[in-house]
Image (spheres, rainbow, N blue to C red):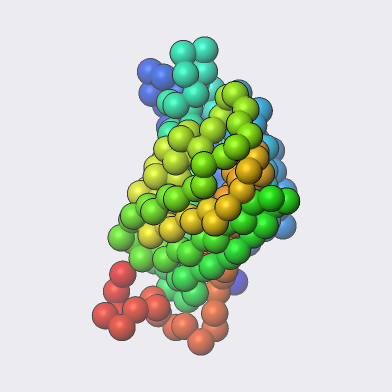
Length: 196
């Protein structure tokens, strides 16, 4: 099988982001965004999705984390779309339910090239400062739009914001791993229309 990977770079007046994403990997990672908790979440995504991910981002984090987080999502979405190519032979759909201590999240996704994000998380009773659910929402919106992904994230319950977000990133990685996997029974794109 041909190796599926892509390298994408984006430069703006606010950020500079470079990512190398390999779909058929082992979960190796080298990630630096200037936002330690975001790095932690992206490592979980890579490890539990078996994606090899090298990512470096420099942004105006002294102003706000938003620009960096959103642009990382855009770059990772572009890398996903490029690595998938024609999307022939992929399972297309993925699902994962993933617990993390007090939190449980289910993720369902479709690599349909018709992007949409549904993002429902329970209100936490324990929060922390820095990266939060609202920044994660911006990341997943950008990732879904540029990756051509219909992405449904539903947090069923959870008390600790850290655990809730950890459950989310792990579940997205696991569901995406299933969706990008090759199925030998699928000889074209998995669509009754013959195209995505």
